[in-house]
Length: 145
Length: 145
Image 1 (tube, rainbow over the protein chains, first blue to last red):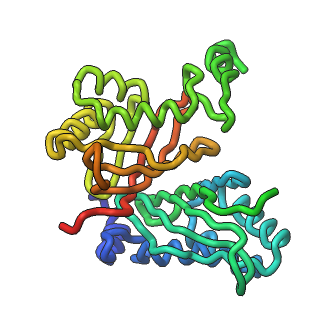
Image 2 (image 1 turned 120 degrees about the horizontal axis):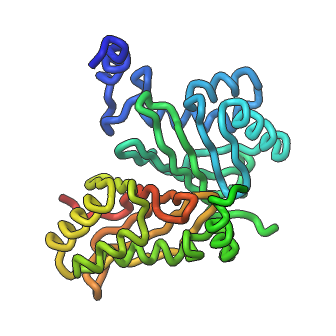
């Protein structure tokens, strides 16, 4: 192990119960909940800061309807969703299930109170530093077009 | 588009309803069902041929209990599962849901007749040629240890 990696190794001493860590010792749950929060953060500066915390620089998001790569595109995508669906809230609806560098969780999207409009599951991968490298969303419930 | 890619482009003319194809024009369903069949093929030569059809050379499998990279390791992993759980059959229990280069499907594992023992979801990615690059399995039902 070189000196250059000693800081990361030290941070990795903070492994959580899943044996998975973030660059600052955050658990995967914290990373995922930070990611979910960016969908709901309508203050641009705070949303961008949250994206930078959760995602690797080259982070790649894909679902059946949208895609974005890198912090700037991810931020523009979330701003567009918020503009199109004002008041909608993304909620995590399952535990954060992770092993190796992989993670999955279920979610719902809709008004803060009332039934969800869209539901699905996100599959993600994490960098060795514990940031999101990829999120791929699949849809389980969607209104008819 | 260069001449070198014209063969692949031609094969891609056989896009299925999902717009996703394999190197020989196979649909993603065919690739996934070929992958599932390798779990149940106990003839080593036929299993290895099926792995070579379904997986890219550098294909990478991970679930919470097992991992293998490349055709040889994948084959050894499946042979070990078959030896440990003789008569168990892997069945796909959902549609093959795919978009972009990503795919997911649910499965069960257990005796050919009778209730399943293990259930889960596989999340995969495909190479541009339509072979499996990665499969990440998550477990939804598992017997207590």
